[in-house]
Structures are given as C-alpha cells and as structure tokens.
Length: 151
Image (cartoon, rainbow, N blue to C red; front, side):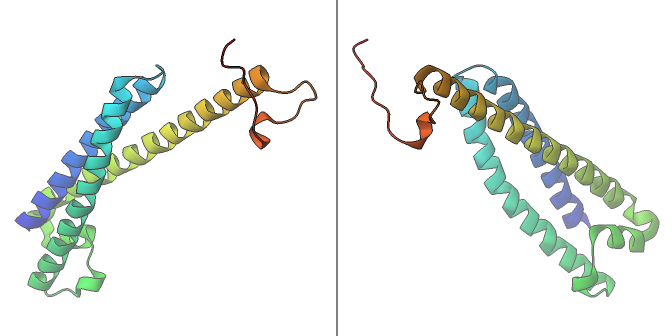
C-alpha cells in the first residue's frame, strides 16, 4: 500500500506542478513574445513526459497491491483497493481524492489554454486579413501575398 500511496503522491505533486506551469502559460500568453511563456512551455513538456512514467509506476503499484490482497489485477482500482483495506485505506483514499481533484483542474486549465490559443490565433489571422487582405475581400491565407519590404 505504501508504494501506491507514494506513487499517487508523486502524481499529485506533478499535477500541482502542471497547474502552476499552466497558470504561468496562461498569464504569459497575454503578453506577446514573453520569455515566461516559452520557459513554462518547455518545463510543461518535461513534466508531462515524466507524468507518463509516474502513471505507469502507479499502475504497477495497483497491480502489486491487488495481488497482495488476492484481487484480480484487471479488476482493481485505487478506489476499490482503498475500500477493501477499510480503515487502513484511509490515506490511500485521501490521496486518490486529491489526484482526482488535481486531474480535473489540470483538464480544466488545459481546455482554457487551448481556447486562449485558438482565440489568439484567430485574432492574429483576422488582423492579417484586415491589414494585408485584398480589396476584393479575398482570403490572404488562401495563397501567397507580395509585400513590399522596403515600405
């Protein structure tokens, strides 16, 4: 059980880190060419790669505890194992609840960041269309446009 609790704690810490990095990204995307955005994006990529390893470690710990408790590993979940452990599973249940909460928050912030990026992209496209668009209303993104760089 201790390995599973530790694995979930590591995932919770990772999710906390991801939330912080998403917050930095969200704040910095509002400022053009921000170094903070670039740094947060790079750190986020590293954290997400590590998160996959943490998830695999948790899954192995679930299987090990399931085998120890005589439960079919394919049917075991953290919640079912915590319930099966009774009062001894309280810590595991608390860590599981925190992991669920953090995972939901990470998902919410990810969706929010995706929306901000889409809006930013659309505003940029619209601005380019207004500034460089042809007088006939053709889409500047549909083909090449000549720009006098000496102007």
